[in-house]
Length: 433
Image (cartoon, rainbow, N blue to C red; front, side):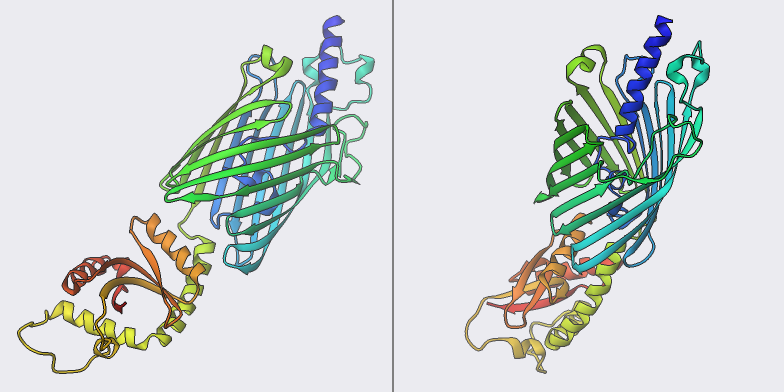
């Protein structure tokens, strides 16, 4: 009887814990924030699937084990759809939940938007009576083997360039698993008893991103947790980080991005206090996969850039004529022993006064600096060394990959660049300073 009483005591403690943690607590917010806040659905613009597996408190028998999988996809310019399922098992109680998510993005400009996410679904609880020696114990009188409950989440996030803020209600409805004697839990709105907040900022130093984060969790008014996180991402290929969670302990994280299609992450946590003295810590594994090469944000940017470029090209007609002349000259080399027999736009641009002339291999012309920077980042991620200058007279931003005062040298570089089909629209621009 003493053994049974101990089991029941542990079980009742675990039920209280599960009530507070209906939305599972994972460590790797950086890897997939959608798991924590539905407003982050398709946050990166890709269709993707993510898997988490967490084994808590190694060394303690029947310690909690949690697994989750989610799928998310952008289905329009501003709409995203997703699916999330998770399973949580602790001692004698198993909880499984499945939710569908609808997300909407309100845009105010490039890298400036508000996102909304709403998730709804069902949860299922199962109590393992077979593991007990005596099911007639009074402590088990109000417990049934299975019941179903309504589950829901709501989130909102805001991004302004490198700053991202988020707030979520991870448990919209109250439920008491297997303790009400009914197969279906009554639906009651949770009065903000569970909350999740996040704030992050990305500092970029060349190809390295440094991302400090602050995370806040409120769990059924019984536990408030603050967490400080620091992530370093190197060339979008490898990330490493650490965090400290109040009243819990230190957490280490590491991950790798394989060709932009598969991501693998791992975290280890070592809790402090009594649990840390009897367990070997907790392990968490993350797997993420992207499907297809289409990125919604890049596609929208490309559409904006097309309009931007058309308008810009209209304003730089002389540059277009100049481009045609230079391309022709790359096929038919200029005969330096013969004088020019016609006047070109280049001649028109030349200042009568002495000036320093520089030739640029241009990859794009933009009306807005933000668009030029975005395209600059894309080309650099593709391995091309690029830079931007602003032409005050035209009020335009020129993105270029090569510059030289030597015209023949610039034409040679242009020829090499144009041999790559994806850079076939490169052209030469002559600038006098």
